[in-house]
Length: 562
Image 1 (cartoon, helix red, strand yellow):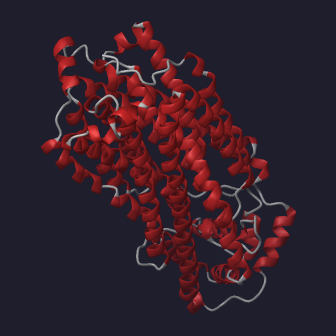
Image 2 (cartoon, rainbow, N blue to C red; image 1 turned 30 degrees about the horizontal axis):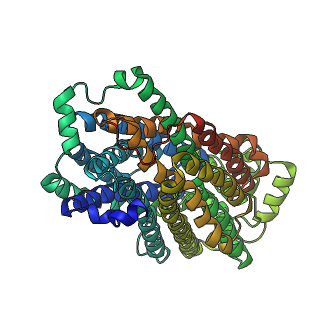
């Protein structure tokens, strides 16, 4: 007869306060993950609006993600040490306030740099929540219930991610129907709501007895000591193993997995715009450009209207897929007008012989195609506003549709993640921590490479995305169980935080590496192939999690070290 059969289900050992602690810490991490996924879903649309003319959306997206991870790692280490020194509950208040308040402020970003700054500050709180929450749960729960409770905490983080997807679908619908001017700003504004959880933490949550006894014995100054952690061979080895394990999963998720949303939005953006061409909507942009060249005084009006609708010249629809004729013609014409020079078809074509923002000098073939594009009569000036209205409506619908598609992709990814993390909990209780990590790291590498290679339509999303979510996020369920088992009470939050957050520092280079592969090594293939090949190459990082396992201690059925 098994232990479980002798003593009944693990949850029978929990009293009301155990459930309260588990609920509060689960909600804290759930909202933390909600915040992360709001960013992943809204990142590309925000950069399309905020990036300066000629700026690379992929590059700015990579920098925003990297700075979030740097803030995440910095906050995780700082709040992890504070969690060991001043208490788990008190530290949790500050982490929740940080990630909720700065997420709300992100909605008011005016450019890429304040957007990136807000994401860094948000990351400070996001990074601290995990270590404090899992340490608190690990120390309050009975030993037999501990891995199950921690697995549940991590699995329910997927509910926060799924909620983010549902919010993305909702706000995408509102933006498509022009009920909201900007879907991504609305999403970030919602992110301030988790601050309400602070009331529960401050009124009812108590510090664990394990922590109080540990601090009483060793003193608050020694608690969370990095010198002891890295100066003691046992804890140093455990920390290094944890850092490498976490790096494989965190880089895999934040440098590859989350960019599947960008890949899906990129694929469907191309599909939607091609459909608009087939319906003849590119003629609106052609007519608009002819009108502005015939009546140059309308150029600043067009630029002002686009800016007021959070649109850029890059949103103008060229007649052929893979070309930027409409954008570059308008940019050249506006530049001539602002310089006080004559604006005409010939002047615009001559100006385009020089490098344009974000583009090389035009070739003879480009010049001939653009000259033909601008041939024909100009509409009268009174057609300006109706043309702009049609173009703005088209682009708003496109933006809303992309947000909706991103929301569906995110929900499916995290439905898979929930089951993956829950599965890890059950498998690791049977075969041990090390073998379970090996199985899921290998699965994550193979499945993620398959998704980036093959995903192409709605039907692919329905099965590929949840499968990738299950394989990638399963190891995060393992982190919640395994990392608290590696360290004694006096440095548990610090050790857990160091594993996770040094990994995040390393992971901050991941999006930049993906961006370098996308815009450098594989740039010649063009979108979306460049992003596909970059993602597949980055999948090799999962091997690091397998290579370190022979050095990892097996902690199955072992009590927490004191």
